[in-house]
Image (cartoon, rainbow over all chains, first blue to last red; front, side, top):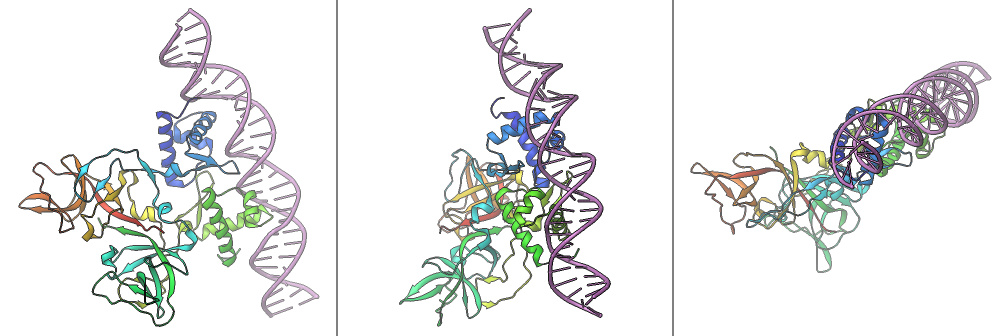
Length: 197
Length: 197
DNA sequence: TTGACAACAGAACGCGCGTTCTTTACAGTA
DNA sequence: TACTGTAAAGAACGCGCGTTCTGTTGTCAA
């Protein structure tokens, strides 16, 4: 048995294709068909090598399951400077999964579509989707989803003369100074925008 | 056998927890432990009901696999208006998976970190991550990653006197008018921002 | 020419798994 | 009290699956 080689990369690719369809790694017998291999024993050898390379692992039941690296798409060969163009630096491709990147605590995280343009100077546009982690408290400077007069609003949390206030990021909108207690729904932890094609 | 009920929702939740750890649905025997049930036969009944409710299905091998709805996090009970606060409209929770939402063609899509602030008026900030679909051509108005003088840049594609130009979204930066042919690397299809905690 | 090793093929075994069937407990209803 | 349906428990069966072992082919080096 040797190390992970280009041939294994082929098998990995086919396995990723199958997994993309079925979200599961099938039996050795069906993998024979997927890989174009006739013997189950060799399929096992291949999977073992893929696991040693860190792409898959086994559950307590002995079932093969993908690891993080299995899903990875390479993160660009080069950076894209939005400023003045610079040379292409060809760094080693980092790995990425958007969901896991943005969401640390799935159970406490919720996605909320943004409406209006009161936060446009913070680069938050109408139609964006906010990734919000539900929390009772927040720090000054955080962008929070707050409940004001039983209504939801997305603003920057600030303090003024000892009282919490909510600042829009748009000159055209007023600062909100709640008279009662300020109720925090959650804190903005991420933002998603989809451009229509 | 009855319809999907709150009890099934409990089982679903436990199954989601297990799946979050192992990215696979285990054997009936193991599920007995997961669900707190003693008989495999009843586990099967539960899974059958979950499949009828559209949460899971079976591969050609007969292996249980999750369906789209399985991963769904409810999309906020209410919208968060970034403009003036409005009343909470409690719509039915839509479903969401970020990766699938942003990426249609995984093989042609790449993630590139954005540097600089030349697109800041388009709400694209330094440190954002651009979701780019690799394409050879684009339309006027698209935000594209172009290659100018063997350097990458993110700009809005426009046309001026019959020639393609690249417009920054920042007054402080000049319009780029390539002398030779304009080479398109890809088109911006999404944007991701992560706020540090 | 021979040996070594990698890349498979193929057969045989035994346990685990899903399936099916029967039985039990319990709550509601009439 | 008897009936009905749901929610399970439990046993028994048989096939499929992973495992292991042995055999075969090809390639490169000495």
